[in-house]
Figure 1 (cartoon, rainbow, N blue to C red):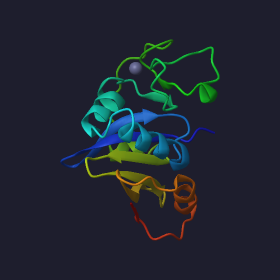
Figure 2 (cartoon, helix red, strand yellow):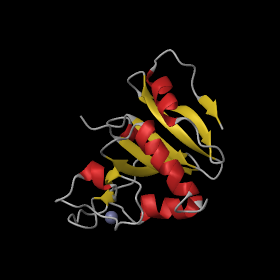
Figure 3 (cartoon, rainbow, N blue to C red):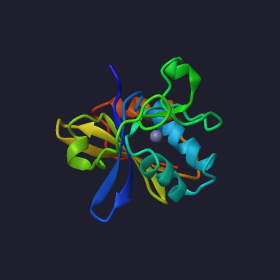
Figure 4 (cartoon, protein in one colour):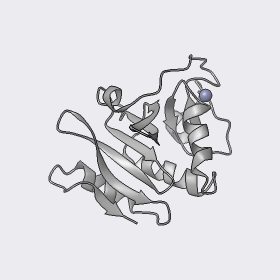
Length: 165
Ligand SMILES: [Zn+2]
């Protein structure tokens, strides 16, 4: 079963972002987004927003995090081994732009959310059958232990949000 998520930026009233279908758990997607901002985007969070939210408006099938390969959906590859970033609007797919997703819509499908702000990466987790809640605030300056963070966010008794970095 896919682990669905939303990749978002802050707005004056909350956040807005794009759908991501596969591997939305922090041990994969948290790490990919953190590494993308610190690596490929050289700390430019606005550039990351443009790529992740504006330039691929149909949303994402899977973010592999390999920016040396062309971005786009590819039918004849092993999606998870290839590592490329696969959207629904380029490559072998040509889906139309989707509306931006906010808190209310995300609560219908998302297990996790990621809000990229200039200060930090906020990991949202689905809790209490209602909504995505802040699960952890990860500063951009220090790489957390993503596997440990993933484990802790799966434990229902954790006091959230966790503070890291
Ligand atoms: Zn695209």
